[in-house]
Amino acid sequence: MICLSLAAPTLDEAVADVRANLPHIDALELRADLLYPGELAQIGTFPRRLAAADIRLPMILAIRRERDGGRFSGAEAERTALFRSAVGNVANGWFAIDLEEDFNPPGLREAAAEAGTRVIRSLHLPDAFPDDLEERLARMARAPSEILSVAVKINTTRELLRLCRIQELLGSRPRIIRGSGDYGFASGVLAGRLGSMLTCCPAPGRPVPPGQVDAGTLDTLYRYRRLSADTALFCVIGNPVMHSRSPHYHNARFREDGLDAVYLPVQVDLVEDFFALADHLGIRGASVTIPHKAAVIPYLASSDEAVGRIGACNTILRHPGGWHGRNTDVPGFLGPLLAATGRNDLEGSRAAVVGAGGAARGVVFALLSAGASVCVLNRTEARARALAEELRSACRGGATITAGGLDESAMELLESHREVIVQTTSVGMHPNEGGDPLPSYRFRGDETVCDIIYTPEWTRFLGRAEAAGCRTLTGRAMFEEQAAEQYREFRRLV
Ligand code: ATR
Image (cartoon, rainbow, N blue to C red):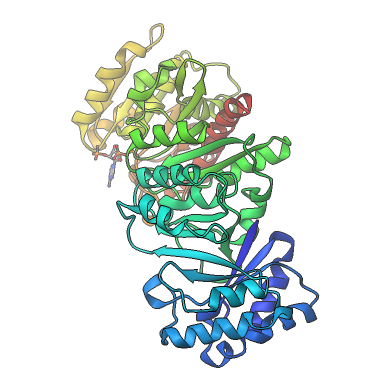
């Protein structure tokens, strides 16, 4: 169940939020502590207002204290009175009231039971994951009619794994378990699959707490209500990773193909912990992004040639013999380049690569493997030379690899390798859009020019090439092709 957490300041706005999200939600939680003080006294009228709007959904009432991450600053006696007035009338029909682990005023549980309202027994840990969470939960779990609820800040991938294991420990116990923060994101999307009764999320347009998405996104992008134990799980790992566009790309493709699969971002600090998490959750494949492209390699049982040569792996796939690593940046770069040039390979071509960092490695290997001769030009010339030495053995046929700097003396080298020019440095990337790594180079118009940067899609460098009449390829074209290549691998594993 998707539970809309109502953070509106007035009851009328809360009803409007529910109405606007009806297609995506199965329950709602009124966060009464976020209401204006004058509205708080009116919470007893909320069920009637919903009924008047013809809305019938299970309703949860929460009045969260400041120490639990809420805004209620009054006395406990006042909170007790508010809960009592809400559940006092059976006709109100609250599904549940949220009472904290330490909040047990005499008679309130009984009053709730009489009104047919359940108790959610909750633990809020907005800062840290306690060492003894499992024991605390075991103590809380004593009253079997209560629904156990834990909202805990997740600060590492290992803590996310621990929270997933806790879900398993709780067996069939009714529960609502959620990790907050970016590291906890997967615990919200997979809450139902892991055994939680529901997951709470905000209405679009209201503040989105870290590690959550709004109800519509959870329902449509992540297919929350259709996830089951059979759904094939895929993810992108990185740090940071929440900004990644990959979930939009892969989830859209899964939907188009009618596959029971979902793809989500998983923020990872230590790759070792990710592999344990992947085993626990049964993750079938993942995209790997910065800073883990090299760190995953020791965990692979096998890999394609590019991974070994480049020392970077951007795709991991669960094969029967263990994890298989691929680097789809190579076909992602070559595919659009060959399509643009109308050729099957680059034999006899001469290409220049600007930059000698991690991204340049993949591009140089790709060009060499297609048969081109390559010159590597880099601000720090020694780095360009080192890269050329390392990849010399990947030259095919009579192709060569040379190196130079970015100054005037290297321009001759560029002139003789200008058929294809690939920009791989970070110069010109958002937020430094004005940058140009080769400001003195004048394009003739017969070069094929690529820039691997995709924010912005049109860098100053690529814009100059386009204006000079060159054939151009944006980083976006390459990003999409490497994602398409990944998708072809993922869909085989569904
Ligand atoms: P990536 O993995 O994205 O390639 P990297 O390994 O840090 O990142 O490499 C960054 C590349 O951009 C390098 O080639 C770097 O040149 P140096 O080796 O001389 O550092 C290049 N680069 C970064 N800032 C630059 C600038 N202002 N001018 C020219 N080149 C620059």
